[in-house]
Image: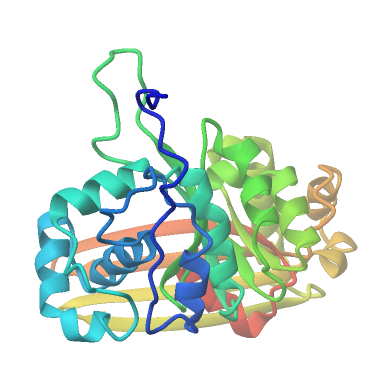
Length: 321
């Protein structure tokens, strides 16, 4: 009986490869990815080899398929200690074709498994980005927008999700990460009660900026610091610090003032109004004054923040992030 067109014969089995670095944690993770190609006796490169080459060369600075190929050629001896290169370095066309066949959803769980071996601590910045050039040719299509978590200390992306609405996607992204003991920062768009609740459920701390999108809350905080200043902070539990930096002819001064919510409620009427807004998780409110002088030019900026669980000694770190 003739073989049906497009159907792989039963006697054709996927080709197996033996990798020298098979005990490496990254190799073990990559071996869990199913090869999207049809089984063939002529397969020269395993899916593990292709992905390992792509990942390592991108970490070395390669930014396109041609650079990935030539970087891998220069690293051939080192790469061969981890993956099977009996078929040589995959061509740039093979790399692009195979990687484009792998569904993105298959890689997200692998990233989480890889991060399990990395101790996450310090400051985690949550921000949304729109990928340049990701919009289709159709006028009705929209570019790809991602919400991602960035570890400031380690300099790596801990996770990301494709979103249409950052506010609803924030809790989903946070729930995928192990953030116990970390400090989570974000932009004013994600200063939401649902975001604060998601961070606290992960046993992490947060510093959220307050801007015009919460006009009532912003006004209450401004009046709070105005009232505290009139009282000269007498009877108010507060911390204050200042920094001055001089870089390239530019002098930048920062002033940080932090008040603790519970003692402040007993003293300031405006702090009681903030409490009435049901932001129960807030335990401190902060003001950040920044002035910069460069030659004859000068600028001045005031920012307000609210936080949960942040101690005064780590206040500057969170503001600067």
